[in-house]
Length: 199
Image 1 (cartoon, rainbow, N blue to C red):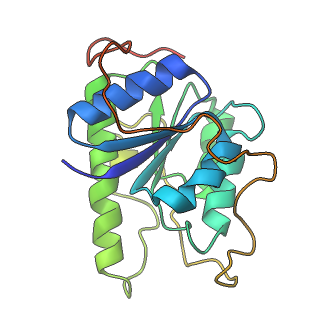
Image 2 (image 1 turned 30 degrees about the horizontal axis):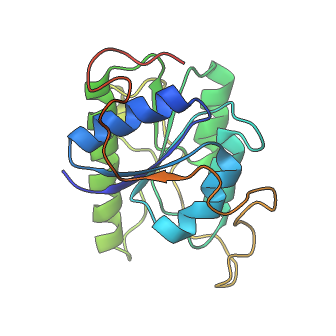
């Protein structure tokens, strides 16, 4: 499988565990340590999918997702929350258009399956720009078969705004290149494909 994934988590061990498992399946992975850094790099890397933790410094996952959805350049990127979510966070995530929820600790196979499904769905959606966007994800990862918490709020239509991305974009607190990790060898990193991730 191929695709570029932006993994956002403040815990370096979890970031590396997610990265290793996705790279083993052929995905290209770029990482960011929090939501502010995600917003800083997302336009440079243009990922096929973004995975977000919920609780992070500077800018948490749900606020990051809301900013991505409000930006005309990123509103259509599939987003998965990978976190130990409360029901309230799941409900809030659905309202901002999260496409899938994967609870920590997660099974690496579920992570790969969920991300792969979102990559495929995102590509299919981009190939049919005139069609209505999925608004309930009845057959996607939120339908139960693996992604915890279910439900997608759907993305509706593109946000109104100019080409410069009014209504979203990089956080002023983020420093360019601040801790961004991309590609490279995963050798010697924790979680080389086995076990469960806890967070």
